[in-house]
Length: 525
Image 1 (cartoon, rainbow, N blue to C red):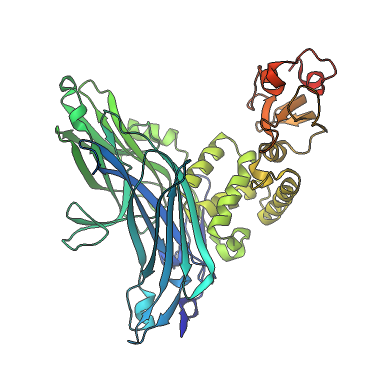
Image 2 (spheres, rainbow, N blue to C red):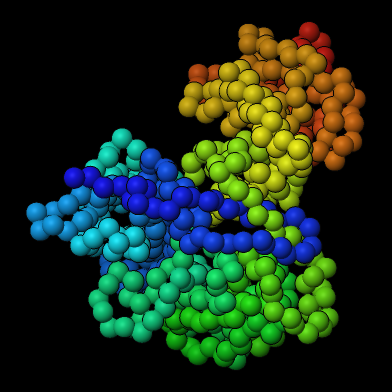
């Protein structure tokens, strides 16, 4: 018999947190975190995947460190199907495929069956968590990670997660691992995947701390302290919470330690966060020499939901922090099941974020890129919802529908190979500025690569400034494969390349041909 916990779950009342304004408000939270995060009626596996990079001694070379990726995930137990065993227990079995690759090819590949702990009853299943962690050696460089979960009781709806990140070479200098947020940390000698330095450290799969969290737990490692010059001692380590990576600590949320000359230092700790208001925060760690110069650092972005922050004494530091607060402070409650974002899966919301890049200001672009690196489903959904509320307060769903239609047009016109139109450079400009007044496509002009000129009689920039007679020049750097790339434009803030002729004309020639359409449109721009 196949069992799906959605049959036994209470009716889902999804809540979406919306931050806008200055006053935290929340009318009711009557659901558990997992039910908040995942729609119980989902057909596909729902999961949150994250990773952190640490370093271990290279077994093939002495005195060298090798990157080790900790990949970890949490799967919604209500999104998988369970079967009964001959022993009358209830289990779920999830085929897990893990691939790490770089530009050369596959670095590591793993496949295994993740089986849940056998339970004797439905009631026992209702309270379980499905969490796993695996470690993989990789090499420095740009790493692409892909993880796929397939429910063996229903293989038609797998979950796939993809991410990319860069691991720098260690060099001969002190440096930190990633700053890892922890869900749980306890002393225990048990041999589990979560054991590290004599403790069970279960990492947090998402960097979101809600009302139920009064503390933040963290872990990081500092390597190659023995590379610090003796003239720099004593060296001081500061761990603190701030509103950005380069701001002063918020209040008294700082810990200062003197670091000894050990090759590797293991750092863990806890901060109370009851005074942190709702919004965006950073956990920072710095290593400073005796002159106060930072010689190593790391940072971890996190988001806080706190509808009733504890009062603090406002001093100059806190006033400065409040002045640059980019957090979105007022919390409203929205019935998720009644919004247009409810029907989209986690991967689909990530694609919607990419669709919004062309129409986002610098702060919005920074936020989106942060979400794409470290996705948080709740905040991703409210960010998307808030974007379209700002366009049509009464009917944000209609605003999304109109924009989605533009994306469909872009996909139809500008898709290049496996890249959908909204991921191409022409699609980006079209979504940002709309239909050009004129498009001139030139594919066979003597001495040039194929190119297109887009001319706008009037163009409105993101800052609402109007520009007359704006021109964009796209070209195909490779005639046999690949799509158009933006080579030059007359619009401030977009690509501007005064040497565009040396790229467009074969062998760098041309430029004096008055019959060239590129010269006619771009010569004085």
